[in-house]
Length: 415
Image (cartoon, rainbow, N blue to C red; front, side, top):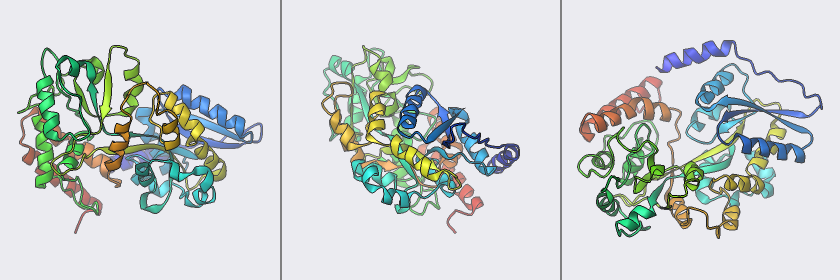
């Protein structure tokens, strides 16, 4: 599959060119490859604000459907025609790093303006891989436990607490599974929940050198077993394909394990949904296991407009921009902006849970192979474990063999 992908990108790259029209006003033109989503009106408004404050710079937004974004970006990079600015800072950073400009010199020069200390410590760690700065963040996601207060109240069940363990979570979820509602969910199709539980049990997907998959360790298998048991032995989560189609928003799930903060704006628009958040329960290892991921902007190392693009990145991560993001339902990535809105009574009410979650949040593995291994090699075995009754230990061993064979074939595996 990897060979097919590389060949396909090379073929597409042969006929791909990034047109750079000359701005009639003589401004510096910064080409931004942007994945179209529901935030486009907000983004376009922010770009207008930036251009009003920077009369000599024009941001040329090249919108691409979100599902096609990575293919388009990789094609342009392979063709030697990368955009000046593109989305990075998340799971694709390790792949994109060779094509990104190291911004450490600019960040040091403009340290007062960038104000790294205003970002949450977990965000600071995530945005400085290897001690260098390759991007500036706009917003972030951190794994949290979402709960439906109405369903808890109806069952006379105490709300989740910061000191909850897996046992507390499972016990409450079993008691709340009644009258057509489920105690919690099980997230399928991606790593968002099973890897969190692997971490909570003390396991990891890779060894520290990222050269060997370690999903077959007893700790990792224990995490996968708990994941399987939520729909099997414990029976508090709906089997794949049988839960409410709108998930937590349906008002039929008492809890959502590891939900995405990008859904806050959706939940807020449902008047009947009485919800709040808490940090994830601690697993047997004492780890919560939740991940932190950033949405950020980086600059191509070959950009002819590095300085103008840098001005744009600074603006997009500025307090002004982050306030706009917060108004649209996103977490404030800057602590100063979070403090400004700390007294707001809009949901979620328990904002302290975000701080607790960030204390132990773990970034996704920084290897260019992570997405392909997690989704193409491990995920099918995880899916079989849930749908075909494959024992967690067998699924883990099969996934580990496939992942290590892949790493060995790429030359990045342990010798």
